[in-house]
Amino acid sequence: MLLRTEHLHLAAGRLEDAVRRLQPHGTVGVNYEVGFLDAHLPEIQAWVAGLAADEDWAHGFYNSYVEFVLALALALPPGDPVDNGGVTRDGGDWEVAAGQPAVWFGDAHFDTDLTLDGPFVVLGDLTVDGLLSDGDVDRSLLAVTGDVRARAIHSGAFTLALGSVDADVVVCFNSDGGLGAGGDIVADLFVQAQHSYDLGGDLRTRVAVLDWLPDGTVLEHGLTPDERLAPWLPPDYATVDGGEIEVDTWRLLTEAAAGRSPVLSNPRRI
Image 1 (cartoon, helix red, strand yellow):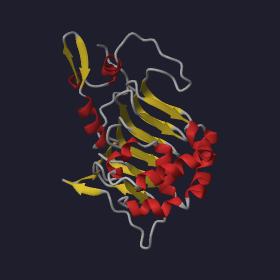
Image 2 (tube, helix red, strand yellow; image 1 turned 90 degrees about the vertical axis):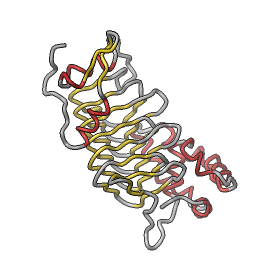
Image 3 (tube, helix red, strand yellow; image 1 turned 180 degrees about the horizontal axis):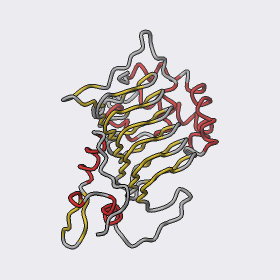
């Protein structure tokens, strides 16, 4: 469903029930605010009313709190028939366009890459047979009531999954967004790169390039993320520029998205 102003009016009277449905997820620590949305209900209602009064609300929707967006989506009636528009195909891959927030009712399964240039909410599980790129905090967000599964994930926006997040390769970037899961985060390779992450389950990775542990303990290692990642990749995935190692992250993600993860079984000497 491509969100429109009339949808905001429809959701307004159903917000209390939506918040009640989200409350239990706060007990697993997926995100502090999810468990306390009832205390913010007047704020959410005022937020929705303010959106409805703003002709350009959709273009700034990415800047909303992801928990509030999830409550709003849960309050929406799916319609009859169910409207799952708003996700389009461009050159073979799927995308959510900038300034056009979309809600998907039920499980969503995309057969190739999915790129978010706008906010996207899935009221079910999200499966991507390729690369899931959640965009950046300056244009998008992702909220999922179920599990997220992709071959590769590139995360720079705020992403919140009430279930688990599972991918062969997860590479984060920037320190502004955050990756949250109510269950486990499972990945063969997880690269944090100063990106915030929190979870209600376990961090289950074979190769973890972390700046801090899930409990907040800062890791002092004296190496850049690329210096720690390079030994786990074939030699031609890294170059040396001015004495610094640089990993071709996009190539890593592209290969993993195609089902050909280049992550080595054991680290090599550099």
